Amino acid sequence: MTLTPLTTITYAGTVAAIAGPTRFAFAPAIARLPNGHPDKRFVAFMCLYARDVLTGRLAGPYSDAAAAAFARSALVDPEILAANPEASDDELAQLAAVPLEQLAAARADLAPSTGNVADPRTPLYLVRAPRRSEQLRHLWAMTPAQRIAAMRRGELSLEQCFAWAVRHPDEIPTVDGVLEFLAGDEIALAG
Image (cartoon, rainbow, N blue to C red; front, side, top):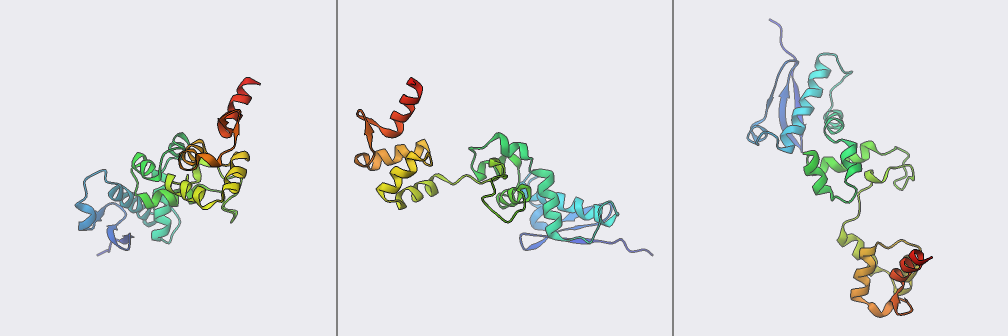
């Protein structure tokens, strides 16, 4: 009697499935999820990786980290990230139908590995855009002079400038009675 080799798939700290060379079975918590659920899809792709290691299609040994990287590469299309630069991570995870935490990991997988997070070679779609609350928290942490300098360097988004204008309209320099961040656009358009 020959025993079929099996691989235990662990996801999110618990056993999620058992995979063999020709079939796999989800653990009850994953099996109960509806088909198409991001966690269930993700674990299924981890199982496919285990199958490919067991059958020799991929070099082993199996590891959950390698299986997760395989699943991310199969499920997170870089074109979805590139086509939706303004989308939040939640929205992108829904578009790709992957667990939210795997979206951030996919960005890290796709980014050049230079050890420098601010690497200028990193495509913008791989860099998580700061949430609105983070952008405003950063804005309010600045002094008025720092906000003016950042505005003049072009480092503030239009949304940040408008939030600043609502909260502290007296701090923003004006040009002929027009807020400077808007007057600059008028001058550029007129010139």
